Image (cartoon, rainbow, N blue to C red; front, side, top):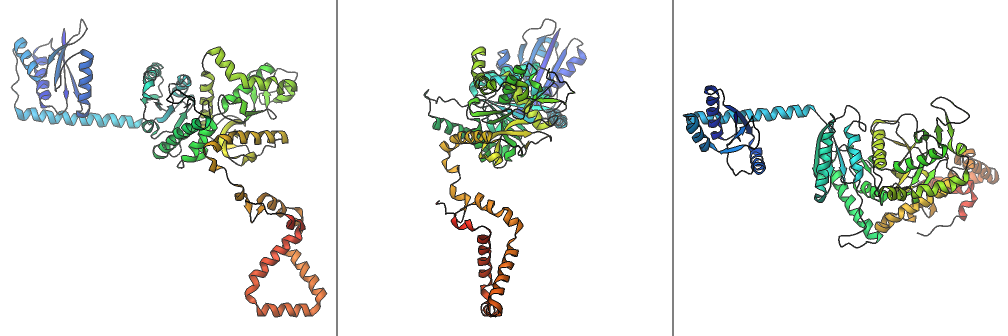
Length: 566
């Protein structure tokens, strides 16, 4: 049995005439089967071209008619257009069309109206589904392969949030992305509504709710030569300045951006924050969780327990996956749960990691060296970068950021520091908590010892080296911290001394005046009153002089402070 397929544009009158002729044949011939395809005007040309390429046909007009063998299958047999089908019907069935032009035009209008209604109906049902748009840049990297299932399954953004995924990469890597798209559909996750592949950053970042920036700029330039670090950083800065401009113009105002990967991650995140002025700098972070998890895994292995039980181990400094040499692994507050020791307790019960390890030599030698060599060891054994752990660290970070974390646990996160622990004007890995969904809070009230503060300062200088190479003017000059040649911190220290608290300036002046009156008698008083009457306009100047005199009285050493040259 044969089936005829009639396809055409909704505004084609000849398609309408063929449609009526096919209906007449179906009524009069029980074995005649027809299938109709009506395409909107804007879709018709592309659809016809793809159809002809697939079946190796040559046809350029609407309508098009072909015949398919339903019982046998196989490739369809092209009949042709309007005239060819009329001849076919006349020769085989002795039926022709006598439809007048007016009726044919009315049928065309009806087809156009039905096409518009169908399109509006589809848009309406699509509007009921409002997925959030998630973008992954450099999507051909191995981490994306494991990140997509976590996002599509609802593990990251919640079990009821629909996802529209956008994968951004260069045209050279489109084949890899197409394979990833096919596999994402094979997963059959109900929350994944759409997957878009693109090499256009504006299209990828438009109206995004969350962005994973996984770009890693090679040190080799287009000529195959290795760039100097300065030139390499400049190429990184150029790329992230471009991302910042697009995010400013096209992304949602509350978009959440995570920068991760190897290389100058702190520098890239800082450039992004400085240029994406329309986005709160708290919404752009660098991921240091992978280094934190590696540190926890080493401690758990030493304690012969599960790494999930090790809490509050903090990474200070660099956030790059290969930046272990520029971090400080702080375990001073780290604790372990469910440790198989002599003392047991409920799930909330924990013991200090330092006490449980009880091996200071290992903590100061093998622990640090193993952490620094972890990335190299992983590459040697896998023959490629570790992608499973990197994707898991990213997905758990975004989950905690969006939905909040359980308990009161501290994590490591690269943020633009505002002076916490003496670090400012750079992106630095600091302790944070995700107690409120949609935000994080920097833990600013820890009390690091002197050795820890010294290491934090050294790491800050290391992180800022990259910024100084490309943006030397960003480092604030020393004169900005001076007020009339005096150091602000020193002045503040003098003002907040106990002597100022115990003897307020007003009381001090009153005591001085009483002593002067007792010494000079009524003559001094009459003289002061006379001067006050003669020069009332000098009152403001006298108040300023008295205030300066008062400050000098409170701390005589103020005169010894030398002015620091700019």
